[in-house]
Image (cartoon, rainbow, N blue to C red; front, side, top):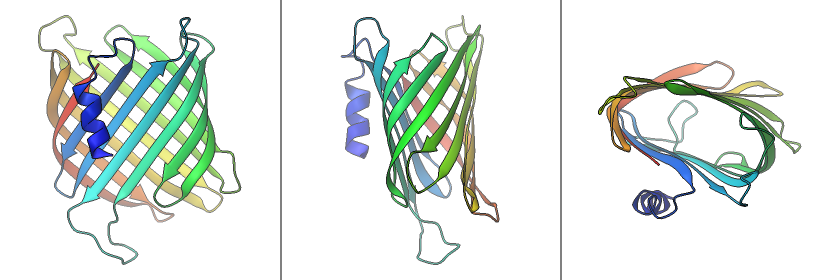
Amino acid sequence: MIRIVLLLVLFSGAAVAQTGNVELMPGNRYFHQMHSVEFPLNASGKFSWQQLGTIIKYYEKGSGKNLPKDELMNQSYLVYHLSEKVAVKSGLFYTNVGGYQPSVAFQFKWKLKQGILLLSPRANLSRVQAYELFSLVEYKLGADKKWPVVVRYQGMSSVGVKGHNRSYQAFRLGMQVKKNQVGAGITLDEFGKEGRVYSNYGLYFRRVW
């Protein structure tokens, strides 16, 4: 997976039509990698293929109930754009805990004057019931400047029949130089019905295209 991410960074300039980003953050508790890539499948842009992924690699881990465990998440979707702001997605959702699950999701996207707002509710189409809400807000201070300041929030909350499964809130504050962002970040992770909260903070690097 890490090799795939590096290839995405190296060859991002080769496919002009694609959009995406890759973020790496070595924090105090774990190494965090996130990426998102979308390719149009036809000339009209109505259909596209979207791939989302996350890797969390802990520096120290164990087998106990409350000890951290590495995480791998991957989502692959066929996307149909109903309009510029609304899309419906269908595909596979994978985690190293729950395995592969067929999934359906909606995506609502608003382009702001100096940023973006995105909401995406998702549900499993299987006996393993899970419902999720993903949200993203990014704002660029001085978007018309050479080095704009980037403020970004990204969150996800997942619940099932037994209650809360997994949530996180990721905050980033950095500066963008051409297609690269660098700055400070903190991620708050919540697990299980008890809602145990852990923090991971450090410096991040983000490549957008």
